[in-house]
Length: 439
Image: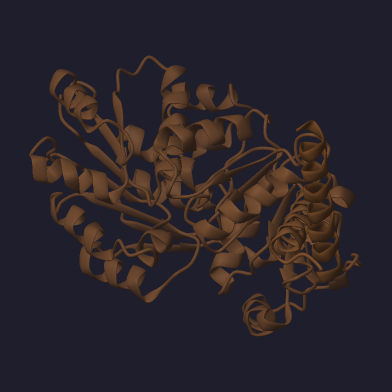
């Protein structure tokens, strides 16, 4: 008997899952689906990539009455990318069924007027979105959640960590007190406990231990280097490892853009993902990465949060994360669905304390290695076959030669000046003699 059947999932959804080659529930799904199907509030704690999305989507679908023309389910995510990903996964489930359930994703970067048009002209049953855009619609009066019976806070720890606590509270208050609430997170912070205590009804806590999985399925290494050699070390490690797909993490948007330019100049097939990009650009980058038209994605933590991309074999922490939670989220991009993965963290002397914090949180001593690189790698070539460094030095030499020539003209040597004067005087005497003879 199919295990999803035992959990109470309808046959049409089981067939939809089988069409995706999903036949067995993951541990988080086994634990949380029966609780949610029974109408209980749930706080589910498990690492990203363990199947949390289906753990709430399947029970949510059973709670929707497609004959009602109102929003009955609301899923709140921290990022646009995760909202798009959850929407795509839900639509994939619905496409294989005869259910007439309409879904709308709302997030920044989209044309809000198009969203409003859909809300006015089509019955929407499920809204998936980011806190800012959801509240924007609430303030405009274009969305009402008075009939919401199922609320999901996905990747809640990240949502609260990046400063959405007040927005999340405001959204929750827009929904009925009678709703069912599911909160999913990779870590459990004080803010999450606060949300659970204030807005959930005797929630069942489900925790899937993940440290063992990290040890078994994600090989981890530390490359000891210096800030000066880090770029060369990363380039060398990438060439040695030859990843199928890799994600490179930096702490800030500026660092992402800088590294993107440097790796692109070295000939790597890369692109960047951070909050300053337009939504169209971000979606285009993710599409190319999923289609393996890019090999390396350079991203900030927030931009890559919750992304589930098949085939990511390597994660590179170019900038070390500041805490164990961020570290777990980053390296969880690889080793997904039981596949092997490798996470490599580049550590300079100033990063030693952060590394110790991460190792203490994991209860591990990560293996170290040193990557030998030259003090100065050859500078990448630019168009015309001339390196940036060579061109710069050539310009300096030409400028220096021009300056020397100008100084020579302005301050001629004494000997040459006298010689030039004698020549002028000799020429004048010659012309005078010729003039007398002509007379």
